[in-house]
Length: 102
Image 1 (cartoon, rainbow, N blue to C red):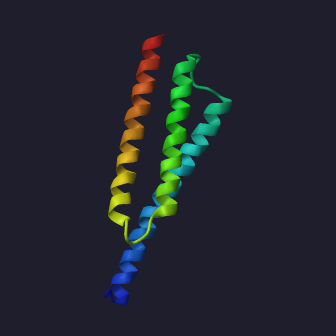
Image 2: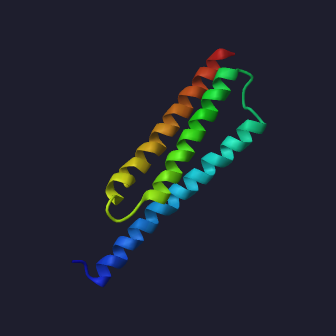
């Protein structure tokens, strides 16, 4: 059984997980919308790969935000960190391949 003070700490940690995942989701979604209207490249494969990466990342971020609770906090914290790192690596790889195209 948890005390009231421990419950407040756990709720703070949970809020600390939900907030960045929501903001990462909104950032990925806004980048996706901008990329749909203003593609960053003339190479269609790079544009589609970039848009797919942003869509999948936004979906994962929103899922982490809405599915997180006290029971799965640690798993989803690891998932959020992994998603951010993988998204950055994939987007870097797409940008590098697009630069090699020209």
